[in-house]
Image 1: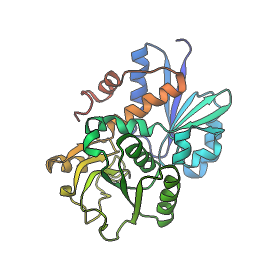
Image 2: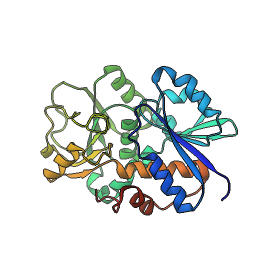
Image 3: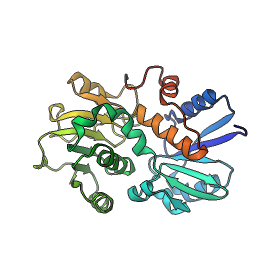
Image 4: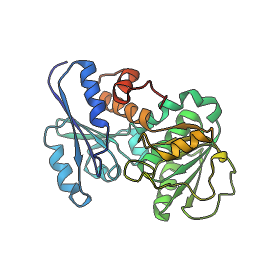
Length: 285
């Protein structure tokens, strides 16, 4: 393996991100030279800054909130999963051609593998209706055969679009939507898994909760929070209530390693990279 890799993360308010540490661990593991940068782009500057970045010689870009959907209009091609989700979190730049992928599905599924049987044909409550939530529903259906999802979000139009687009690609899953602040769904009293796909409770909003007033810990078997801040109060509260609780750290590493494979064709072991970044064995945080 020769040459120097140059990758980066595109998002807004991303100073907290551990992506640079993940790729430093990747470069160390492979004993190669590489660079990974955080590109914090203001929403009003996205069009200009992204196009400049795409022509700067960078070979791969991770994409996070709030640009997973917006970036699509600047790409030449999408892989089938990103096309189905209408959300991109990984861009491969090759000879001037920009190809969009979604590796969030892969990363999300990793820590759930020991729970395959309990989740099979089960139900899910999804908090949020952005790109991360789309990847979660897709992965729960394709990898764990979840049959029904209730999706809670603030914006009626985004909820409508969420259901409409995913129902086209996942015709055998029942997707119900509810606006935040409305009453408890009548369809299900308990959920096999509840997933927080919002930034609330995460690095930028540590004291805020996306949980509806009617949701309590006794209503779920598994709580999965896509945020990976170590002081996540919701994850701590779930564990105190003796609910299986998973944070987003394994997903973060898993999707990054999948992106590295997309960008370079090189597969890497998950465990040593995770331990190098978080200092513990996977799934023990």
